[in-house]
Length: 197
Image (tube, rainbow, N blue to C red):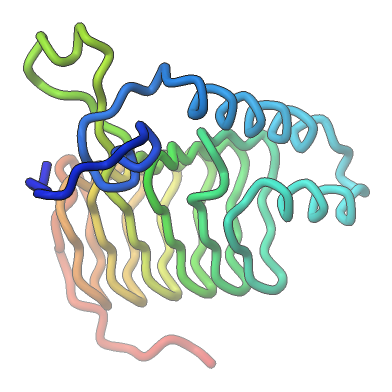
């Protein structure tokens, strides 16, 4: 966790500043409950109810570009920290723990079962016992493909035009225009071709 000399008044401010915060705080609990209600409604929609799905996502997400699609079931913590670019596609069963910003660039594809977590807990047991946690932002570039079941850890950035293999666990930044796979996820090849236009 990055040291921050500023003092924040609320648990939400601490959360967004990647400081220890109490997730059981009343304001944060109320906001998570709101997101849970909206995702419940979203996950109950029928396939033909695209307009209703878009209405719910407009209430839930912090930002979404044109022609985004999320397939239910979908889960998130707050929703308002998720920013989707244009034409982002999120397949079935994805989870985004957005206790801090999660930014996903234009034309990025998430395969089924992808998990993105900005949230993390202290490794020391004493602050964990006090119910403290932290959250670091996640940034995913444009035209990225993240394979099925991949896990993107807190504080990670993934560069434009990169592919993350199925089942990978991304614990560190991955540069642009590479193929990266494994646990922990590692670059195995530079991608030479330009993406199709």
